[in-house]
Length: 424
Image (cartoon, rainbow, N blue to C red):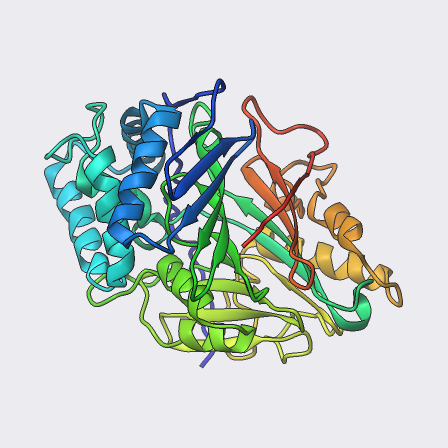
């Protein structure tokens, strides 16, 4: 039975925070890790082909600590902001105990190779045995909390759009994706934006995210399979027992699969703490995995899939996503929040007005940077909003990647995209 969500869930907005300053004078590398400071983001290459995951984590941690002075203070400051913005009192031992349980439940399901990476990173970056928020130090649990943010707390509110087939100028998919996160009281998240290439002989992956975050927020593999996460809350009671980390599962899926369908199949089999969407594309098409964990409704939405009542699309070779489920018989968290249906209506109206036209990356760039005259908020249908951290354009057939990285000091009126070359 379809259910209607009457009360919006309480979102815990998160950010990666303060006191880290980029070293602008030099770029640092070890034998297997290269980090180049490009001003607005770090370009990171991790070459795994003759190192263990633990050794790679150690090297990466060494470079991070050299490039970002006070990384421990930055992360600790982030947790202070997290507490301030979520209403969680991290000085309360009972609250810390709940957070600790969530971390320890989920980490047991992370693939061993990724836990080895995290242990290697922690061996360099961690400098405290105690989880004390606000002491300017970093404990192992605090570091793991940052690594598991989408699984332990949630705070993303994103939009995505893709055209393919005869709606694409190239005939192949083009993806546009907006990442909207709370960025911290002092633009802390901006300080550690990164494009990270994981070079492996068995399957390489590129992610657009943050220094030290080893899961996938937005990423693609060397076969051209793309994945990006979007929240889709149902208000279900939180339960972390036996649950997996979906950003780490996405990375595993990208490293080990060569098609959209295989990736979706893998991401449909594990239990997760939060319901969500995964926006997927490969060189043939684009689809949206509606992962409703609460009702075990986990299906791929295509361009012409049947939808819940009152939701109109029917635009061939075009898919979009906001923070809601819309497949027929899935949970209705769409029509109760105008920030969802206003963005959906914007995408629908604009694509409909361009009927018969083939769209290219510049067209999608125009659509993904829309800001309503009424205000830079989802409730007015805006896509480029006050919380936007990154805007990403990707073409799986050519691996063309363009990214707008939020600068310090607030959003510009017109976002500037950077071309980023990715070599495997």
